[in-house]
Length: 291
Ligand code: AMP
Ligand code: ZN
Ligand code: FE
Ligand code: FE
Image (cartoon, rainbow, N blue to C red; front, side):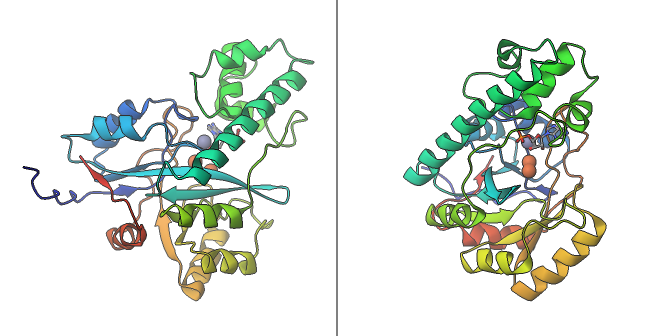
């Protein structure tokens, strides 16, 4: 007979991490091990535009006491800006989610091919070099192109690649298909999930979305703003806190861990237990996995 659901262990809550299902360097199992080793109580797996790592993460967490929040970082486009929407506890089999994320991943694949084609005019880099840096079904992104550039010796590491060849002003940049933030938020809410705007203040003085747009997202079910993120500017964080209070939005914090691919460390920013409790209560048909 199944016993009662065990109570989540206390411990730091980190709601934004990536595995090798997208552009993190650790498999979901290895990421769960890292989360346990880092002393986290709760971790959300939020691969770009994919839920393919959820099951492996649950299996790996079994018996560890770690709570896993299944999630995703949904790509959206707002005019020229790429805006990321964190999505938690939605139905991964929801038809719109399945179709739309497949469309985005396909767009990312062809966009990566276009970027590589442009780079190959100036550097000895082939599409096969990039494929060698990812496994089947991975949500492809610039980090995989970066890894190929590192392996070929053109740049010392991923971050250097992003600051030069892969920078959006680096001369080889291409965009990819993604829905609007409004469509994204609506889709996640319709799939029973909880949307949070990822790192909304990474742009300094340039704000792709003004307060009116964020209010509109709130009206469609946006739950919160990821204020605690190393890429948000200090001025931006202060502005977001005022906006959250005004609009009745919650505030989250997280690492955006990518394994060795980025300097971000697990638990470097965290979310309060009270906010996590509200987030879980907002989800209409799934609950966290308590390992
Ligand atoms: P893309 O999604 O293809 O436009 O690539 C951007 C993604 O690369 C973002 O999700 C970043 O978090 C990720 N990324 C991974 N490693 C790095 C790095 N070292 N520097 C900058 N971005 C990185
Ligand atoms: Zn990423
Ligand atoms: Fe992001
Ligand atoms: Fe991320």
